[in-house]
Amino acid sequence: MAERKERLAREIDERVTAVRDRLAAITDEDLGHARGAEGWSAGLILLHIALGLRRQAGWIDRALQGRTPTHFHWDLTHRLNARMARDHARPSRRQVEDCIALGHERMRQALARMSEDDLAREALVVGERRVSIAVVLSRIVLRHIDDHLLSLEGAS
Picture 1: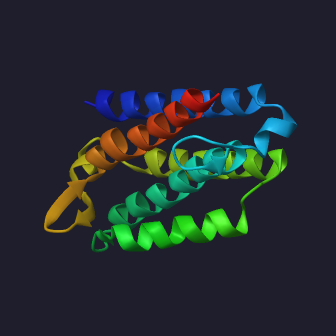
Picture 2: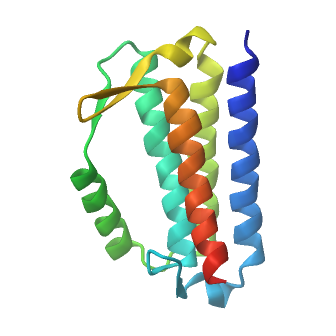
């Protein structure tokens, strides 16, 4: 029964490898150039993916602790993104690498602590909709990575 959890963990690991590979393929000069639909630098887009992993793992950690689900608000997310873009417009390669490592490790630790049954726990509330850990992993974490990597690819 642990197949679903293991499949999701493997898919996240594969996506993080793709993020690392994308970072490795970008020159230091290109890392600071604006691109993508966001108009952010390539480094900022990759940093954003990594910070997303940390935030999303936090939602999962909270659910695993039996706490009330996190209430997700787009306005808060937009403010966080605006602050990140202001404060880290051109992150260094090292900053991005470190943040990817930290975000990935936090997500891996959350996944390691959970059972297959934990995938059904509520982790997030979006408006009136309650979202399980399984949906956070499959539709939010993976899509967030994919969408931003596509944005980078489309602008290369």
